[in-house]
Length: 212
Image (cartoon, rainbow, N blue to C red; front, top):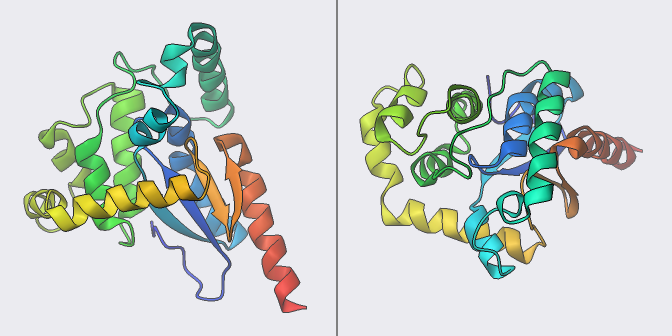
């Protein structure tokens, strides 16, 4: 599976996501196949929701802070996962710490194994219900994808890569991002897994318009 889909002339779409985000789970598991079918190139862009929420005055996910919304969201999330044929289990810890795999994803975001890694981490969080921030689980998610996963973990923790993740988060905020998953086609923003197909359609439509 290729994180940057084949086809140099395909239109592009940015995919902003967080491993702690339950709706990002749905998109991570679906976007690759849908984008390849639509002939759209996907740019995977990790970001941190914590700083975004703090700037809005929240010290936790709104799904935790707002009890009624939280009850609804988990039922809705399960329905959506069932609709798409995705295995799911509500994690016993939410939101779960995800800094280490997010840093690995930042380091690897333009690598051909990015999609497979992200799907492995998401399965750990939202199907297996294990600690995705534990190095041994990150190494397990990398197994078979890179030659030396341990070296990659060291590189992911180096300051240039940590800064890159912070910068991507700040840039997302400047573009108006307030949650995940978020998709951009140019500067056109789409928020939520239920807008994934709309974003892909917009990318295809825009590509056809420019060819006229």
